[in-house]
Image: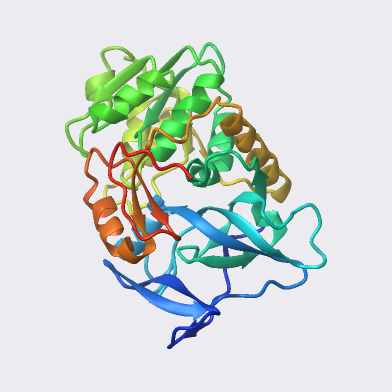
Length: 354
């Protein structure tokens, strides 16, 4: 059975002390608070990570809004899983990881904190001189690489990526490396589309609102639809637009659309088009580790840029404000990352890369 997302152990306390830390808690929908908890001690087969940066993912936003309770999460709850940090303690049975190593994490939930413990399976080391702020988005790359493979992207195929948030922009860079015939992307923000063009998109379409139909804008260039459609949207309703945009016998690779779908889905249309649907979380642990390794290599070798899409950072104490900004979906806010060490905020276009 494949490893599932693990909630990092945490024991809350009432007082302050040298062995306590700050932890962000979703008390109820739309309200984050800061509590105190014990700094955990790793078991013999675990490592402890002093957390530096944690990105706010779409799954965090779904929990924040309360739209996936109770089957996904119940409050009070801890969020956060796009982690970069430094190993500061290693269990005696752990091999291959050292104190002081700069790492990214995957499948660790509840990481908006100053320290977590986890298994070595969840950790991958990076060069010590690689900017730590740029590490946390690496967590999305295993699913993105799997999506590109599932799409069987080749030089004769036209590919559509719906949405250019942080995952969509990384997806665009990865799919570009698969050399499709055409790579079309959509978004509501011209700023994001400009980045997409830089990253290899051949066709970009600025949609007026989230209810716009992609083919009303892309149909003139691609009247038969797309051979591969990859929704990188939060909203579940994106599956309806994906089916409309797909060509006959196309593959629809569901990276996004994790939100609730409020629009009826015409599965008869999918049937008539002979569509194939795929979902991107790797089923086998060996594949997750393979994609994790490949993702790190793409980023550290400069083939995938994770830094340009990080537009805002906030200290852990201001996480509620950070989530409000993420929820507002302002067009200049692409990726928002929480600094679990510093008590300062960084707004768009400031350089803060440690």
